[in-house]
Image 1: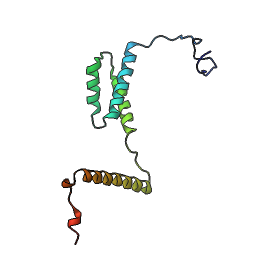
Image 2: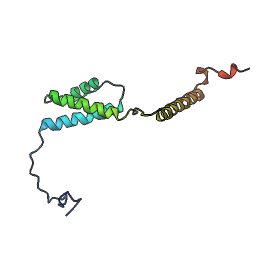
Image 3: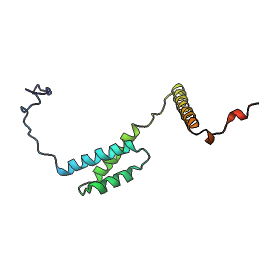
Image 4: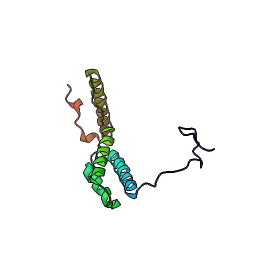
Length: 129
């Protein structure tokens, strides 16, 4: 027996009979479209979901997509994108911690930009007497 062991103790090797029908082509195409669009949704958070879906449909030229498939793909895109965003805080201490972390990261970026191009930033030291 090769490979891992299944739930009933049968190995993953050639011992397991496949008694199910092959997946329909429409189902496989939907899964390919879903995975592709979901990946692009996470990579490009600013692009509208409908635009990403439309681009992928033009590339893959699918004619078997149903309304229910499109609705489920849109929902999957929403869930994937939501997992990349910050969660809402539940109490005031967590909110303050997140705000401080965000402000510190903004200050760090501004300082790095100031080092790269100091002529673009106002010099506050000239205001001090």
